[in-house]
Length: 115
Image 1 (tube, one colour):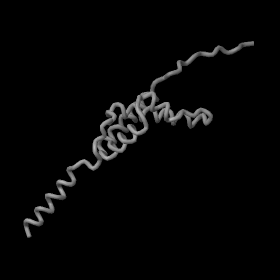
Image 2 (cartoon, rainbow, N blue to C red):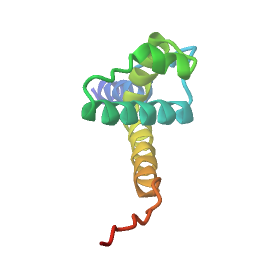
Image 3 (spheres, rainbow, N blue to C red):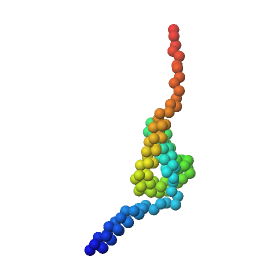
């Protein structure tokens, strides 16, 4: 009976240690995933303000030199590893905060007209 219990415990632990999602051959690096998600967030933010400016996803894929399948497989793989997936989105959040803090417009004094 002890042997059966030990065998079951071993099988459960061995099953937990295996990757549930196989690593794809064309896996995007963590840095590539961060850059892709950053660009995606910027496009979504800019298009929400101007409904007549639509950026197709194909453009984003071409810019990053990937296809939709590569992104989908990489996204599923990283989503199966929560610690890495959280790390990707924390990096995106940090970069977005940095972009937000940058002052892209210099304040210009506008002279007032005096009569």
